[in-house]
Length: 196
Image (cartoon, rainbow, N blue to C red):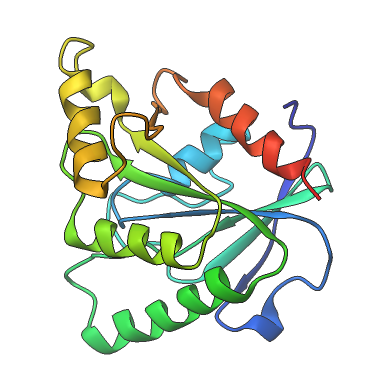
């Protein structure tokens, strides 16, 4: 995919604030420190379109970015950040769940996990939720450059086992630093963008 244009459109906390178009949407979801914004920036070859931070929990709204004037990337608030109040966690959870469950334009969810660690209880809950609502999902294991090639099979197996994927469950390795996995992820995204 050649990205000719990418721009921030809006931040939202409720459906009436979402873009009112029929353009397809690709959503990115994962823990607060998994690198969602960095991955999104890497895909579109921009350094700071989606804001990144050394502090987890930076993304607190549903952020919409239009790509090539043809489709949206949607950066969702991360989950599992301990320093956020329970009340705020609950309100975030409600509007994120509502978006993922009800948004007709949503074509694919890019579900990010950190390759270095077993999926957390929050990761597992999110994945079960996506399965329950039958949402098309690609699992991306971020920070691949931080794990040696020799140890990668063990880490991928850990992710597959924790999420109940079995031996065939696809897990795409991705590194923002090296660009590994970028072309493959774009291929997956394009498959879903081209579906009616």
